[in-house]
Length: 150
Image 1: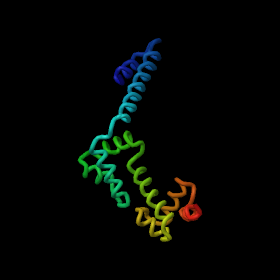
Image 2: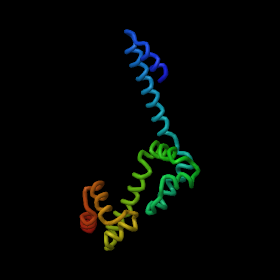
Image 3: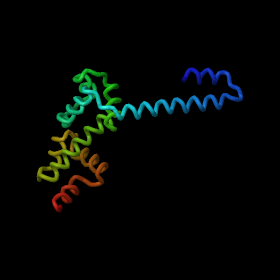
Image 4: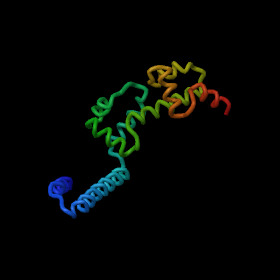
C-alpha cells in the first residue's frame, strides 16, 4: 500500500489527492484493527513468564536484555508485546510494583524512608520521593501520616 501511495505521488493528477487520502485511511484502519485484535488475545506463555519474573525480581536492577534472554525472545519483541498486552512498558510496570511495595512498607512500618527506598530498588531517598510525589501527589512522609490516621 505504501508503494502504491509513493507511485501515486510521483505522477500527480487531479484525482491523486483522493487516492492518497483513501490509501492513508486504509492504512490507518488496518493498523487500528491489528491493535484491537492484539489486545484481546491471551498473552503468550513466554510473556506471562516475563511478567511473573518481574513480579518476583522487581526490586533488582534488571535490564530488558536480561529479561528477554531469560525467556528466549528479542528485547524489542518483549517490549512491544508487553505494552500491547498489559498497556504499559516494562519499566512502568516495574515502577508500579516498586511503588506498591513502598506504599505497603511506609504504611505498616516505622522504618526510615531511605532504607525503604533502597530496598525497593530506588537509587536513594530523593529518587523515591520525586517518583512517589509525581505519581501519588504526596511525599512518602505525607502518605505515612495519612495512612496512620486511617
